Length: 470
Image 1: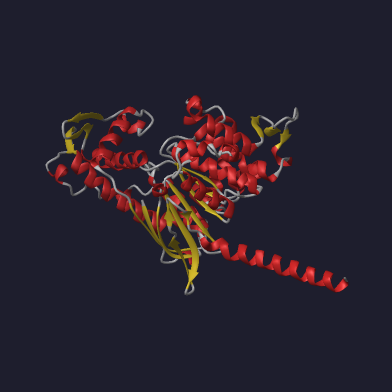
Image 2 (image 1 turned 120 degrees about the vertical axis):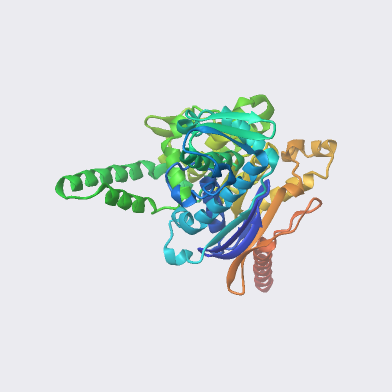
């Protein structure tokens, strides 16, 4: 998928491609988070099946279609070829993308309208006939998708397409909208994000719930005392929801539901024997185990008999909480895991281990998208790319350094970008990557060289002072 964005907050204009592993580096205030959050919101919106919201705005999909010209108001069968479904699906995607850019993106970012004037968000996403056929098969097998509509519709797959029966003309037009939403829901990758505010979300969820309860009590009191419409109340509450960007709101919701989430199994837990190396490195990074209880989330450090409330645990424990639960309880193939600053609150040793974990996830079929200020993470990803040049026998000699053949990473799977200000505009510049030398991310070099030079100058002055004393 290629993404083209313009005038999104601090990011003036950019184009980037989402790879199996995508990383964006750069100085502060150059727009990295805006790129991440806007993509996250887009994927979430494209996977949403909206039976009511914005429905009328998109209802022209089949209104003037040749399939409906000779169709009366009575129920009858409609046959549509896979080619025609693909054509209409692409049109539906274009309209939904335009809707996201014009009306939804502002809500995702929780920004001010003046910060998002003349916004443009477009994508190049290729959908094939094979994708359509596989999506239809999954759609018919999944009883949870469009359950209310599907009870009234009979679907039949024939050699070259799909037939619908049990609907009149108006009913088919309505159903078509939710059907194509469901197709996008299946085709687009499922997204999960760790926002940079994740440490706060892990401890302030109860306080935010308290605020929500207080707000509802206030509304009840207002209803008793004044004549206020339900529409006005909902509009006021919706405005309050927009205090935080959607990734932050979703992180808070995740923490709220974490006890229920802990009962689920990720694809890695379902196939434990095939994913031992993932569990091993995750255990090293976490350094203990979490437990979701009625009283809250507890953390028990490795080797300790005592568990601590997460509120008084270290900042690294809070930072890693959602990553731990994602890997153990949520992850599935073809997901995209997005992390804003995976190095947050982590020692350099753990930053290196996180880079290795991300490599394992990519090789296991999870797409990974990160923004980072960590030279340790970028260098370790480069090491994993360079590792792919070695034979398994050569890698075995690096066992003491923690490497094994599972950490090989193909350079073609990686896309890297540098967020920088060019002639007063924040943009993204693609970074060179080779299999032999890894990622050429030079943004850290100047700072590292400068610090080394400063250290040398200070040491030189110290030697001069000692020589004078002697």
